[in-house]
Image (spheres, rainbow, N blue to C red):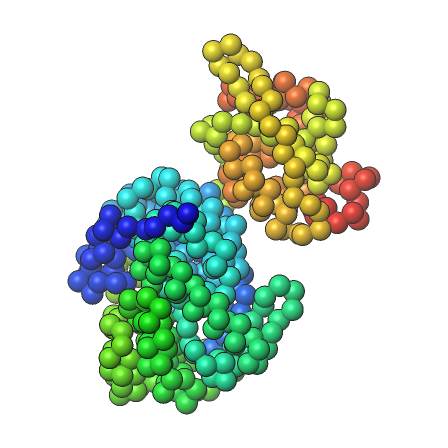
Length: 430
């Protein structure tokens, strides 16, 4: 059975995006952990390095989940009025589901009373809705630019579902179907759903009241009509930004079905501070600092994973391992115990393999391996799982990790190249 969110546990008037009064008092922070996107909109050109632009899809840096939590902890000390943590890109959170969900888990555990929110296009949010509700994500924004595939085909260049990008009305129809399903399911679980709609003159400006009517019937509670921001090197670059008269008309007509938000600041994916006083630029150096932060061993995790051929030595490259042995420690008797043997994700899926591995081993503080390529190490450690390269007896490695001691020099190894059985096998080791 799905877990319902109980918004009464959170003071909604403290969410600056949902309360115009709260926008002057309470700050929000966006954690930029989701760089990839699963659609291409004709108005979007994502840049990661332009700190002077204030629009969605822009951030100066990308954080891993562990870096994001450390950055959030630091920023909460610097800006105590932060009440809301959001994930809004710079791509789509669910084109980056491992990073998004792990960040939500870490933040909810560390800040049990903080409001959590997401902003998504809704294409791939479906499989994660139950956990979103269980984590008490109180607010989800779905950007819906059409509920008619003919109009949607003018907005979306392509929609990627699996390996093949879908174009035209076929892609738009799938997009709309998934979006409306997401609105209904989220609302049924008590999540407050806001609908964003980009007002594109001559494309969908007359259609947006219909978006309001349809999504209201499915349980959405608030609508944010956002004026198109023409961006260079996009198909809509030469369109004119809608004027005040058009925006007033769209909001007035849409408002007959759905309450309208009128204080949107078109936030960056790394926005921080009050809604009308974005401090992203001021804290750009802080954000950069945390993107360079090295992973330390999380001693709150109870187990250690080991890649081994025969169960005595640490002697398998991470890319060659198909399973790991999971060890626990009993300090009262100073003994190590095998608690599980876990299969690792199959090879051939690139970075996704390492992300899934890290989430599958989220109760482990470290994985002991004979070697590991730089790319897998970067990804796995970004999820808080330390990669310890060594060769020798398993027990010696466990002793160092569980007793929080430095690994003896005689055991240490570092990556030089993949093993013979790994080369060209599609293991994604480097």
